[in-house]
Length: 344
Image (cartoon, rainbow, N blue to C red; front, top):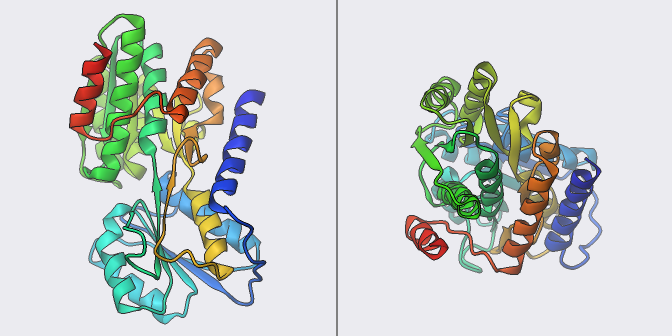
């Protein structure tokens, strides 16, 4: 546990070093305010949006005013952005790749307003009032896939994807590659059932999908489906199987059934980038890319509750290989096919 705690502290320190590449100007709240707009999930989704909101609450602790609005449908994005702009916020966050078009349009329409968005990247300087934060989620997904490959007793695991898209495929192909890498080490074939459920909010659908996977023989299911994925964790708990969480350490949702979680430190990205913007730094038009090297992703500190030390040690070694560039994690079907071919 001490090792995992130290690793988490190191991760946050690395992220701080990355985002605050040079010492920022000392900022004071002075009534400054930051607003957050969710995609189709809520700030209590126990996953992606909640992590972002946790970063906002850190800003509140520093004395900044914060607020949020939850989008119920895609048509809400533009309306919510306009409303938050008219409120006079100093910075407005959009959470999730589903908001890309709305964020770009808002940045074009309100050129004096600063915006930032998670899981969307831009060409350098494309929008002077818009900042992007991208994560190498494929890297943490590779690590939990590697753990799943070593931990499965049925040689059959599952993966639930919330929605298709380039950002989400990072989770899928990273996981598939991690499982394949472990299977190669162990000299066996491991079946992976991968299903896209086209929702981030329908917990019943997440649960039903995981239940079928478990019934079909999978003993470990990883989800990248936001709040819908909590349904998969419920299924694991009810059926006595393993689930792998995402974005946050989700072990507390089912302490005896969440094997590990692929962390995505959205909270720290929101907090640190906000601090730079509010301090008046010229970060507009930039996209920050955060992976294992930068401390933007990783595996949960609770992993040592259920994952044996020898497997965690091997996972640490794999992490070092990824950081060093000795393992290139795929993010597309073509890259995954090439990765598997190279494994032999």
